[in-house]
Image (tube, rainbow, N blue to C red; front, top):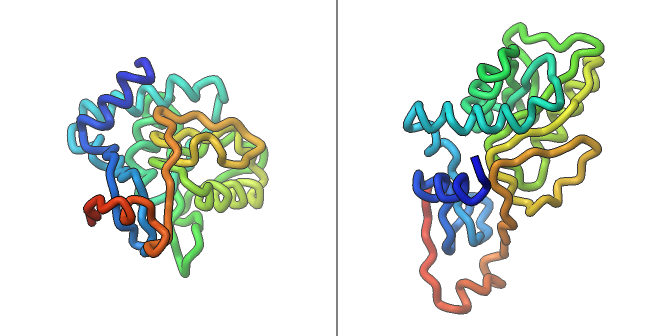
Length: 186
């Protein structure tokens, strides 16, 4: 699927909305990204998962590792398309951990899958888990890269949609200064 068609699909499904939005952090942003909307329709979820799998198959992973909650559905669809096991991390006491009997073995090649990447914090946490267990991260695959391609990493990043989301303190927001209405989407 071509990049423009993917972006149109994401916008059509409500996964990408341009505007003026309030974030839980209190900051304002110009993009609202909600990848879960892609999975309301199972055919769309399967299609974007297959596309992400096709683009990241070159990394030849042994397993897929996703972060709960946002990475679960894209991770599942990528794992299914590549016929690989899916493991996932969960937050406990503010940090991602691997539980539920999932095991990364020494030498295992792992593809990290996320719904969206912005600062790369969850990706860095998952990389640490994989390294600590003796595996290696061969790539990162995400539906939306909100950093504009600026996520620092020593492994390749594959995204279906890349954009640069701007974030502002409320008192320094240019959209507020222009009088644009603030939307609070959840």
